[in-house]
Image (cartoon, rainbow over all chains, first blue to last red; front, side, top):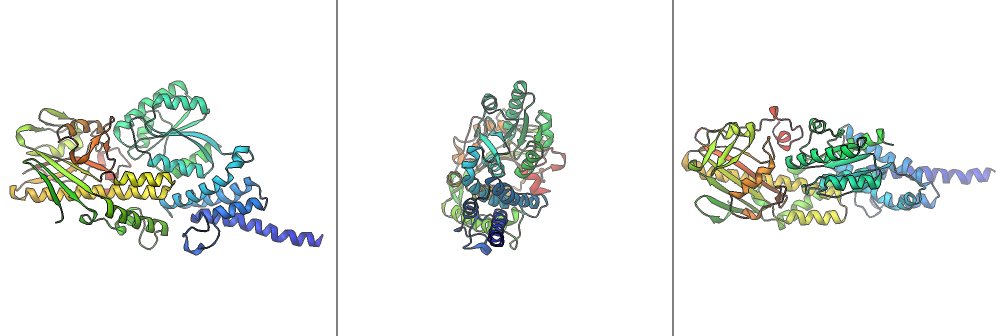
Length: 236
Length: 239
């Protein structure tokens, strides 16, 4: 009995250590052992190695995700909200997060761990800019949301077809300039005609909360982190 | 001045710049991201440096302008016209252009280099690099337009004329769809810039703007206090 406890304790410590290291590596954006950043972790395992090791130790994938990876992202989110870090650091962490999610993908496919939910993203008809939309996608995916990415130049019909196909509750759309903002108005109207209950979230450099309200969209967010917090608080 | 004057008619001029001609430095970009030299994360500093070096090697910045004289322009408090083509620029811009004796249409573009780099980052899911290259390219194209303004100002010295700020379709209430009329008054594919069906400039990192010139016009900052665009980059720059 004593031997069992003694052999169990280091293993337990090791598991807890890996989970805590995972969170820290996410916070610092340490993707793998070859990553040069941060210098304090040079030559040490990153998220990729630690996630694999955690799985080898039979730590439940759900525990790896929630207690390790997402707890790291929570720290990142809080720092961003408090103005301690800026969007580039969120992206650095999100890249590490996505590397881990890739390793965990089989467990999502098998249903062993569940994603938080699914939503549709697209840049509206007439608009060819997708950097902002892609950044939002990366941050949301890294935080455990499944994204149906419709790409750029997305018409109302294409949004509606995707809503029918994927049965989502939230659609996010972005635009860069005033003409595409006007297209946004028509697209929101058409979607709301078909799906009154669907929540439409807007983002993009020229947009404002007032504009979103004026075209009957439900929400506007100026950055991916605030969109993520809204989803986590209202759609899980 | 390293500017290479490559094209000159009476009213149309084109220039080529490289990055050395503009005041874009790593420090400037890092500050514009909200960091100081001390607290900038290593990947941000390193990637910023690499992207600037790449643009410095590869980028050929083109700028140009066309001047429209008093006989073919009209200005009022919320619109202006050139050769009977009317522009509904709205009151924020209209009141500053009002009274101009000539109007100058300017264009500046970074060419395809930015999009090529962006696509390579996209294919590797390098979102930090995408974000930084977009930010750096935006700063460069604005700096190129600033430099073009200085050249125009220099060219105007002999005429003792003053200039307004530059005002772009898509900002301060001026609908970007008017870009089509704007470019119809310029030589075809001016500086290599064309428009998409939705009036967006291709290459993406391009600037177009109108400047009023005359004895009685003034250069004033953007009127962000009466504009509803809370997150406009002009507001961030001037407030």
